[in-house]
Every structure is written in structure tokens, then in C-alpha cells.
Length: 191
Image (cartoon, rainbow, N blue to C red):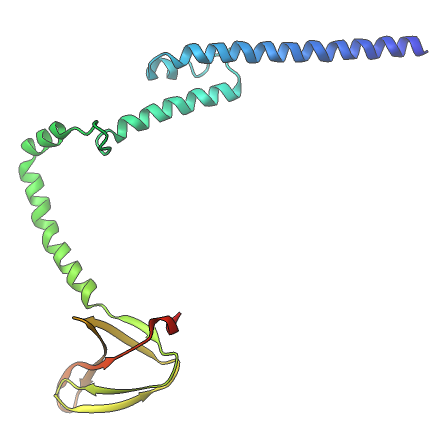
């Protein structure tokens, strides 16, 4: 009984060695084929993606090499490593000058208005502690209010100082506009 079991185990071990040798031979053939394909241009490499001699990992390497070379071609216009083509841009502008001017003329006022809106947009903060504010109303009158901790306040930067503001609309005297008050707030307390 021991002799047939020993022969079976020996045959099993021999089969494992043959399988490993076959796998290594397939890897070696795939590696050599990949080295040959990497020397070809992108289109030829693309046509050989389904080559039966390639293993899955080597086929993935081939795909990545094709993708990398295609991305490099796309980025040529954006990269400033000597590959930037000013002539292409100049040629494009020469034939599309009217289009480029129309885009610039449409975009410039929109960018200007967006910058003004950004500058005049206030920042809403939550007060960490009670604060007394002296408001200058749109009519020119003055008003003093005390805001509690946790109240919201809109802060706008004007020149070198910060100003709190709120919208006032008084139906009785038909006076509306922003009431403003100079304010000093420690930014580190707000976080």
C-alpha cells in the first residue's frame, strides 16, 4: 500500500514541477513578446492587444503604454517643455480672429461683473460673544444695537477695515439701503 502511495505522490510532485515550468515558459514568452511590441508605434501596439502570447499582466502593461503615449500627445499643447506649439495657436487665431475677439468681448464684462460681485459679497459669521454695534442708517441717523452671542452678522471688507452691514427697508419713510457699522472681530475666535 505504501509503494503505490509513494508513486502517486512522486507523480503528483512531478506534475507540479511540470506545471510550474510551463507557467514560467508562458511568462518568458509573454515577456519577450511584450518587449517586441513595445518597440512598435501606438497603432501597431493597439492592433496587437489581443495577442494570444501575452499574459493578462503583460497585456495591461501594453494598454498602459498606449494610454500614456496618447495622453502625452494630447498634452503637447499645454506643456511648456519645448513641445508647446506657438505656431498652432497663432494659426488658429489667424483664421478665427473674429471668434476669438467675440469670446473676449463677451467674457471681459462678465469677468468684471463677477469680480465686483465677489468683492461686494459679504461673509456671514456667527458671533462668539455679545457685541454692541453703532449703525449708520441709510438716512444718516445713528442707531446702537447689542447683538447676542450666536447671532449672525454680515462682514464686508472695505479698504483696510471690516464693516458690518444689514439691509434696511423702511416703508414709512421710503428709505432703504445698507446700514453699516465698523467692527473688529478676532478671526481666530470664529473657528
